[in-house]
Length: 118
Image (cartoon, rainbow, N blue to C red; front, top):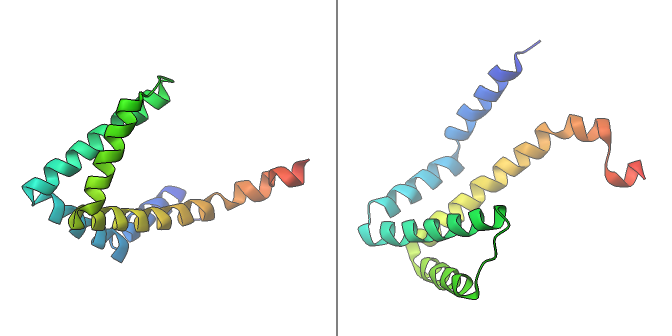
């Protein structure tokens, strides 16, 4: 019987060697090597993490913060390099979500879906 952790490390290695990860890394490096893009991206990430933190703590998010976030999102989406980075990140996230569905299938089959349990 294979060791489940060995399989997990094999999966990690496969992700690292995938085209999706390689494309994400190239897009990330391109943004990090462009001072203007890096500053814009860092600001975007900072605002994003701030809002997520507030949400998790149940704090209210002001209209001003929502407007500021919207402006920054529009700005980064217009930047070709950052836009590409976000696109590649989304592609890799889709792969990871697919993998997650695959590896949780035994639990899903064991417990069934909500419709089956009603």
